Length: 243
Length: 243
Figure 1: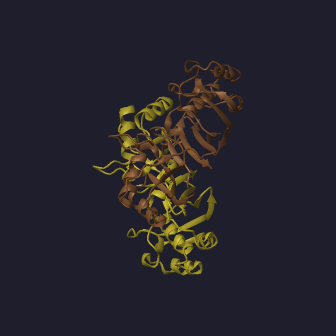
Figure 2: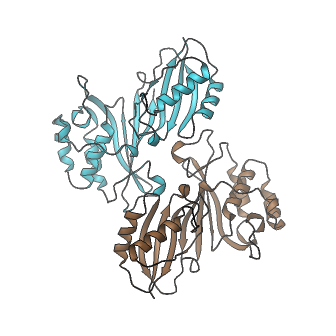
Figure 3: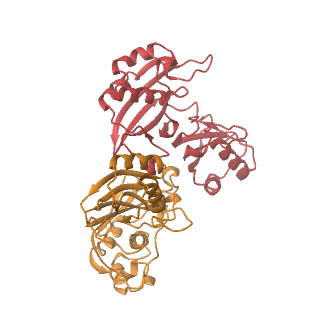
């Protein structure tokens, strides 16, 4: 049974998230509908990162198994013409059997962009969170350091019953990129709303509302109410997935 | 009579250009309507760069004279809340009498962004021209060099009867900025569609359809038909105006 991989990016603004969901427009819905039209076979994809409504992707990966071989170049060309400008199909490739975009992933990288300027940039408004005040970068990096390593991230995840919220963060750094403040965070896996919750907490540290040295205690509390909610979805991009 | 200056940026996608035009949405229309509502005085603005439909601005400047002094901070705050996310009013300042956003400008800078990648980036689709093939940067820079200096740009301007098309270009350079190819061009003044016509010609040089050493002859022809039309508006940004 051949296995295929699609690398894609999208502007999440007009989608109710990645995951197929009856009656609303989703990236998976559009993608699977196109794949089924092109191949004549009902296709169900597995995804590296189930992004929420409004979240974008630059290096998203999906995979699927089907019982007939497909011509990857033809499928790629057809996808490009069918998907519209909100979704970019970068590549369609045949991969080794057993590959899963979800379970084979070794490292996922997310980026979150913030604008400190008093007036938001109209051209960046769908992909940058306009905080609109200067933030303390050093304090935010001190806060981010507390995320690195293996922790129970219950304080920074939307609860999903009976699921572990222990995760291992490999890297979490704030940097200036041009006029923006950008958070880059890497982990094998994230729990739901984890990156946006990290960002909300770091921003409150950057504003001076939370001290950076309080962050380890907030993690140890393992209580979502101890944290600062979630930053808006539109500043977040699933940047890259490594296998 | 006090004179005021407004520095602003906008996403030109949803506007039929800058200039007020009855029955359609324009940047000047929105701005003057807001200014009149805020001040109770009918205000007519003068602009540094009359951008076409779909063209963006980062550092646009307008000015106006009125017979009553206004509180610039209050006007700025009101503008920010009234204008919506497509227009950013960066500053409102009182300036010396006789200042004109249009006639006092010493240098105007435009940027044009191009994506060579095979698949367009969904997040950049409203501000980057997706050419989708590799272009010869050196040849494009050789072509751009021919624009620098004082020339009759009739070949690269949309004809406006009885108006001179002689202009002096101070700088015209193509560079890689991240994944994009960016044209930056500076002049005291440009004629209509001049930057987009330069871009279209350079891109055809970059594709190998026109030789870089043919560009001086195309300028000397002083004939719009000798050139290569105009690049799409959405890749263009009025970047900065110096006084």
